[in-house]
Length: 274
Image (tube, rainbow, N blue to C red):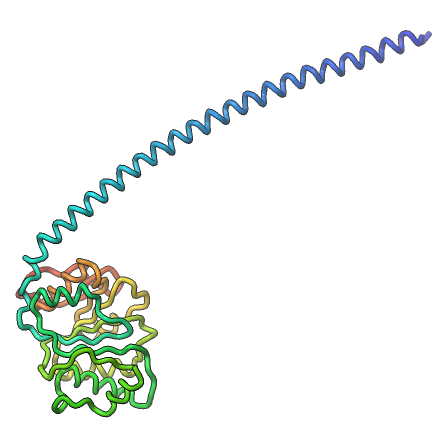
């Protein structure tokens, strides 16, 4: 027969078993948490050491690159006068620029090479009108020194009044090369520039299309198709030496962009035909 005492003993046994299970389970859980935390700390410490080693390696590489750059700059300084000084002596060069003026280092190199700058003229902004082809031909004739006397044609006077054209320098002397410093394609009017290039071609004056490394949408492909040498990244030391080589007689398309055939021109003063 079921007795109350047996019932109480059963309940006490159940609660004792439950408490013991909770106690044992809690102990195991705490041990597992401690173990996991210890493993996590050890992994973090190892990761930190790896990152620190990587940082030290990168710092060493940066230091080496700084040293290499310093030595390369010193090498350029030593090489510069041997390659540049006087190599373009009395060569007449005209400059046309669109949107942006020629980099100062290019002008300095031409001066050190003893080139003679004739006319320097630029388009400060894209302009519109009914006489774009005429304006292109007039600017080309002006650069080539074929305008009568030193009077500006009426069209150029109008464009200058509109602040579309800027004349930095003028000489009636006929240039032996025309440098075209070009900006972004979308800022060039195709009608104007086609007439400009066609006029240079008809006069059989060599022209060179150049642009800086910051230009994203290049127009040099069209200049190359017109039979001219081209140089992108002309603001780099490699681009400047390629330009110097082209002005000495070499031909081709040089630089890093898709239009280029070679990275850098040779330094032959006599030039070579490709």
